[in-house]
Image (tube, rainbow, N blue to C red; front, top):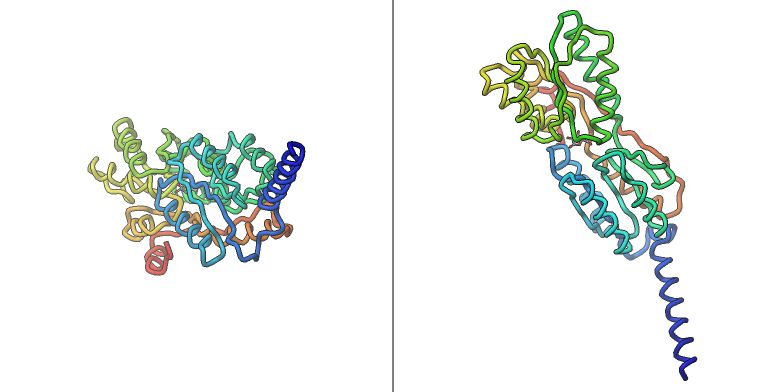
Length: 323
Ligand code: AHR
């Protein structure tokens, strides 16, 4: 009797193990009647760009499109984001999408997802972990964005002995690191002097505070500001106006993102140039999740194209911008 019960128990455990493997495995999830459960680990809600990206993801991973989305925003705290990914693994979701806050620190949790047979798709930012640990990435060419911003500064300020300050994005994020690399490469060999470069965490508050500090320290000697996103540039506008200076004239401003508020400031002449960073990555991310779960071969990286705008171009397209 005891042996029978034991055998029945072993058989049940075996069946459960098979079911669990079936749930986590790829190749049998796309196109079925059951929704695909996706855990999405967002960075936080630091900027207008982030709001547009979250909206794009939620729209693409909707019930209507066959998904059951488990959303988490980590308030830009790396540990919280890693904890969210671990919780997705424990919940046994079918796939995980991550917008990684920082480049480093992902190896262990990505390995855990791989061991659990849960595919991971990265969106927006990149990681330094081995590409074997995730299925695919969709995002932007941040180095090129920084380069385009730097080329605009070079074109307009080289030879004038101009003083520049920089508002950097989140420390350790690929968006901040790569934009700095691209920008610095572009202005290399010019007589443009970088007075200071500090993080404003991609937020309006951060941009305002750091710019107030720059204005106190360097006063009217600042000619040009490179803000690594629109929100920090918008925060800096308040600081510049409060210092009795005219943004766009006394201090020229180049930013990255091209969200509605940034484009409005550009068309009003308060910003001088914006390099776009397209936040509408949801459809491509959802397509990748379905393809990976269906067992299809997917591209390891997909780069979404960006454009850039001067004041006149911004005024022309402002009303038709989708975000
Ligand atoms: O990773 C993309 C960057 O993150 C955007 O440029 C910025 O606005 C956001 O917070």
